Image (cartoon, rainbow, N blue to C red; front, side):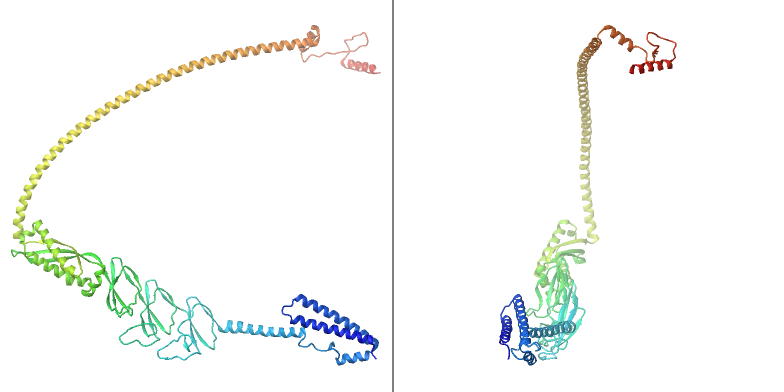
Length: 574
């Protein structure tokens, strides 16, 4: 029989193990479990399991090892045998499954993004390039003979090309064609667009709008354009340049869809650069303002039947607002001169000239009146045709000699008489001028003499003032020098007195010093000895010789004297 105590401990261990599993499952099922809680729960369960296993092994060894062995082989009990494989519900099994799922997802993403999208589906369109796409799937083309390209969602070449950048298109669903050049229109150019895809044009219309084949109504302005080369062809044309002093008269070659007008337009183009479709409009540059034209060798007969020949210069011009009417009714500038100005001037000159005699064209007043009437009639006729006439000038009138010579002779005689009269007047003026010159010369001399006198007086007065100032200055200098001499004499006097005082004081100090010295010596005899000693020669030598007490030998040698003196000194010390 099994030991009750061991059975009780086994039940306790199994309960603890089951409690750990329940705690672990509850922790996994919670909505927001923390990692620290999971770790702590797992460690507690492992400790309790290890304790129960140790207790179980002791009980089995002591009371029934055979039964414990059979239980380990059979894996019975609470299902906690160590030899069983981990179930899918355990934490380690779930972790392995999750790692496998993540690995599959990662492989799928790497294969899809890196290999499929980035290496096979990616197309790079560089600067100045465009990409034409052909869809292999989609709605069928409604009319392949009309539409060479189709919008998005239809099968075939797509109408809109793709611009610069990285694009991703499935190579099985789309055919990709890279065009390395885009359309570039220069600053003084215009792009004429020809559409190859669309409906046919209606009868009587030769400009196409969007959705039709043919020359497009709207041109391309300067810049870079990406147009599908399958659907469109672009031809470059020069832009319309209206120079200063000109206007542009516009002729519409086709009816405008907005206004419905065709032909010469009312509004003109001012000077500048215009980007106009040359297939839709024709622009003629017309010079505005005034200009002149010379009409030479215009002949007519005078009232007295003489042949007269003259030249006429006409100054005429156009206003900008009248340019369309002129171009519409008359044509260009050459036609205006040929059709209006030249024939009208010829007719007016012939009619007006036949009203005057030949000699009247020589006289200035009649000639001027003739010119004014020609200008007036020419203005009236040209104003009706919107042409501005400023003036007509008559010049180089050729009159027959038989008419011109008598008139010229009489005029020459008259002019000569007038010349003589004018010469007399001129002589009088010259005489008067000479008198005025003499008066002027005299006046100049008088002014010069008076000026010299004034200058001399001013100069003399200036010299007197200079001399007076100089004398006053010398007097003041002398007075100052006198005062300086007095001051120097006083200084010398004070300095002499000071020097005398100093000498006296020095002498007194010296006498006081001698007196004090003599007083310090004690007697006059001592002072005399001191003075005698001071006045002795520095080279004086005194020789003392010692001969013993009471004797004075003078014949002893110096060495002997010195030795004796030294002996005496030694005796004294003993």
